Image 1 (tube, rainbow, N blue to C red):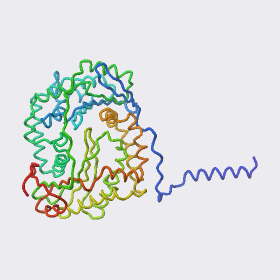
Image 2 (cartoon, one colour):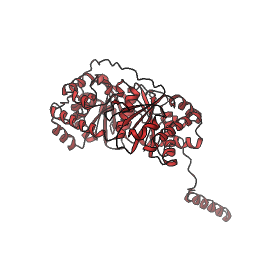
Image 3 (spheres, helix red, strand yellow):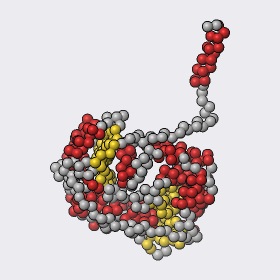
Image 4 (cartoon, rainbow, N blue to C red):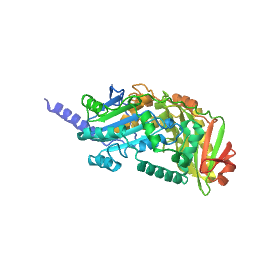
Length: 473
């Protein structure tokens, strides 16, 4: 090679290295890459001989196993005994037919296993997990808790006392009062609007728990998700063996009244003397969980009230200094849904904060979202979704949601791409469809004598005490 050619090659290589080592321009925001086409993990579905559907997600990144049993009955199946599903779930790990509560805790602690159960409106989730080397023991303890709970009288009494104490404390928690009242106003006589009181807690008996378990803990009313360092070929026979005694049965019929339709603007005020702040919620009915627009609605909601970058936060906090934070959320359930925008403000600006919340909702309906703002919300939601895939329990829940809510099989595989495809036009269309400024229920927890006069300028005011019972103004 000629000397001149060698010099050119050397200079070119030097320039390439310098380019690679150059400091990035930190004054410019890097452009995001496209969302992955299929970021959600593959799973296998099998049905056991007793009718239980089992989803297996193989993930060998950690030597752990997570089990999540979903009973497709929740508080909607309380059948007039509000709190029944919650009490049933809460006592599953408090002893079995062969182990006391202390013995069961000792057994799980010894292998580092966790077992938790929680009731929601549409289902009860029982989760367990630990190291895969203890899989056999985990399956044994898990199946014992699910199939043979003892519901000990002393443990039930302890849970009742704990619940009564929590209910008394809630009177000092404006956010809890506002949440319960919002549910009551939005859902009416539908079970979604029910909440526990001292009377309902004391009305539940241990025998009610036994009956709920017998009627609803059936393999044909459940799904099981298994996530972790397992193979379907190995784990399915072991699950079949562990749950061999679990037999299918006939489920009770579920008859639910419809959720009411909101008409006009109403204000529902909990008079809490001494409050120097007001907890406000602007509420309306919303879509059910099976609605096909869920990914796109996430972007719409983030634009309005998804945190610091949301319009409510920027208006109520950054512009006016009325609150520490303002947020919004869709609460989508199996049979109905709700939407609410919330904040906690000083008494003297309570009405103004409500009015500006309604203005921000109207702005989403009336004006297209600027592309730069929309891009921020798209990428924020996509990033959060991709990060959440690291949570095995969350992955198990999503797989079971597909079955529980009747979602398309590829719902979560296309989730990120659908959020990426949101446009200003589609966002405005969804805002006009799902957000209203005319048919809303506004709940406020605060001191009536401080906030009532201004609230009456917004809409008809209904006043409640801290027991959420109507009172005269």
